[in-house]
Length: 189
Image (cartoon, rainbow, N blue to C red):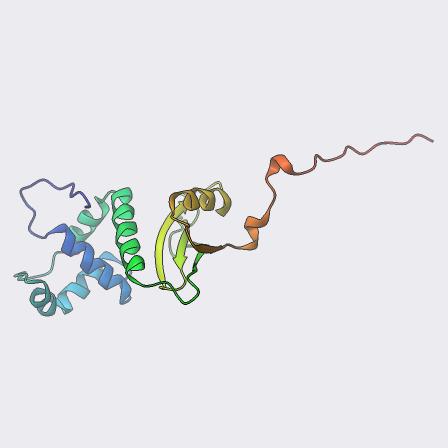
């Protein structure tokens, strides 16, 4: 369950529908709060009928922004993981019985913050190849790389009967196991 941070009064639009409609809008190409508003406006009759709603008009883009920006990212990720795991478990494993889990990092397009000189956000995702579902994702720290994020994500996931694939970047030896650099010796003549 994703907690709704809004006060009880003034909740004209239920958070769960705003979140669902935002996901549908983004999947169909919306990339802003105004885009989500436009999606809801265009499909309002269908959405009302499909979900038994009686919305006379879509929420304003500022309301959508307020609702979505107030969500706790950890709550959304937890709900996402539970839902993805249920969907993944409902699909039988492929013949041979072994499932493949691929971990891969990506930079989020448009996430660079030029105003605050912030680097683009990087996300590491766990993708179930047989069901084509993203099971989890974690943000890669700005001053880090995929390796610690992958170790953290692997510790959080059920890896039973799974083949895990990663980029070659993850084939490095731990720094404590690498040979110490030799100091050059000088020879006198």
